[in-house]
Image 1 (cartoon, one colour):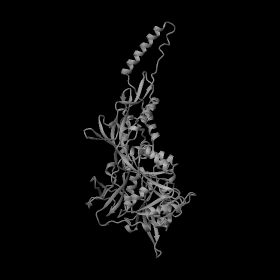
Image 2 (image 1 turned 30 degrees about the vertical axis):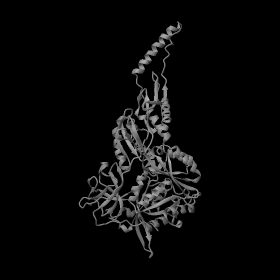
Image 3 (image 1 turned 90 degrees about the vertical axis):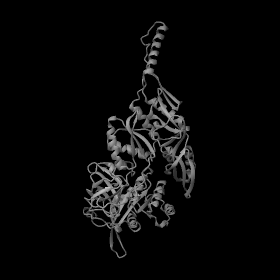
Image 4 (image 1 turned 45 degrees about the horizontal axis):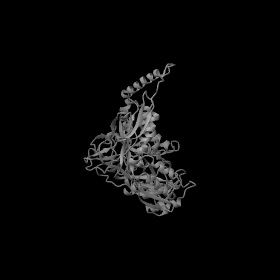
Length: 626
């Protein structure tokens, strides 16, 4: 009902641990742009942990890139005090641990880790747009984790809001009464007090054994230049205190606990963390590999015998090569990826080399927005100039001798006779107004999709389920979907397995020499279009040489497209004034011989700018701007 008085003084002197019955751990799940960060801002103000002078919009979005794009990329945990009046009129102080989660499909792994650290979830839906595909996916994730769901309609102050209509839609999904759906406005603060009361009343208190050996799960970690690795944990059993020695159960690495505390929303040291509490640990460790997300922290003197069930490791969906434009930046890129890996547990990478681009890394991402964000963070935070190759997915190629080759890079695609190529497929859920069913079906059929089912959520909103190849999803599918439905459709997808497909590798040849950076694995029907597009682009980008240069696209030994860069010709007849034709012909034949010899020993130098332009423009055309 009201914030605890003198919240700031509470932050200065924190008790050793809050009793579990007075704790409430919850997260906010919603689609992108449904107002999670704005609602979190109002909660921070109402509970008094951020005063009006320090307040700014999207307070929990710490990265510049999050604030510029208006999206949440990293989950942020914050502790807030709140008091509720019981029947006798006594105020009981509670501590609310809130985790603000991302809403984009590429960052579902962040959401899954947040859900594992909570007992309740606020399901936030825009009152003007209704439930979206990604919200639906996060709702099912929360239900699988047995979380208490609190349905909330946000943005009720908008003129286009239809709270009654969408309250019925949510009630049908969650299994509650439409009157139980809270109506709030994160912008004006209407209904936020009632929401905080509802969280205290409905979300169960955390369970755990306070006398058992300490067990805390790492659900996030960040790298601080001055303090080293900062680890965020949720204590399940026992308690952790400053200056004791702790052990990471998977790596068996032991450290002294230099500082322990809570985020409120700035770090506040405490005398310890007890059962159910969410906080941070600082051990002074600089090695980023020693703090693995999903690991269990225990006490070295009285260790736990069994680790907590961790998270399943995220599987990269899209692979792309990442190379520094200046080759001497390779060690800097390696260190930058190590540090970013700590902030982004879903990042996977390994070293690779390219004939054209030199030393770099093969990086695995959860999607194209993830790729874009990682590249931008590396360039901004570590001052690197990078080039990334065309994204592709993982293929399993079965050869005639029944051996299977896993291909993450077109250059790894085997030659010779191939028995079968298998590609990953996804189950895609599309939510859209019913009037766009025809346009969506046409798009999915063009992308080799199979309709699995269709349900009407209401008279004018439909949910369509398709099976689609992942390679067709990760390029411009979402852009096309948005343009065909005037921005009303939303998409969520989940990898379900793989299927055999008629795929080929298209090689780009410059004067008969293969350039691995421009190769691609595409469906047989789209090979010609890719070949024509790439040869045309390179013809414009590669400077003219002293001799004619053919640019060819080939599938195996068969050339499917060709462009020619004309030679720079010197006018050898300029000095021939007068005389008969035989003199001119002699000079032309001499030049012809020289050009022929130059072509046999000459080599086409592709400037770095041409590589950057070809690969960058290729991604710009196929980029998924979700």
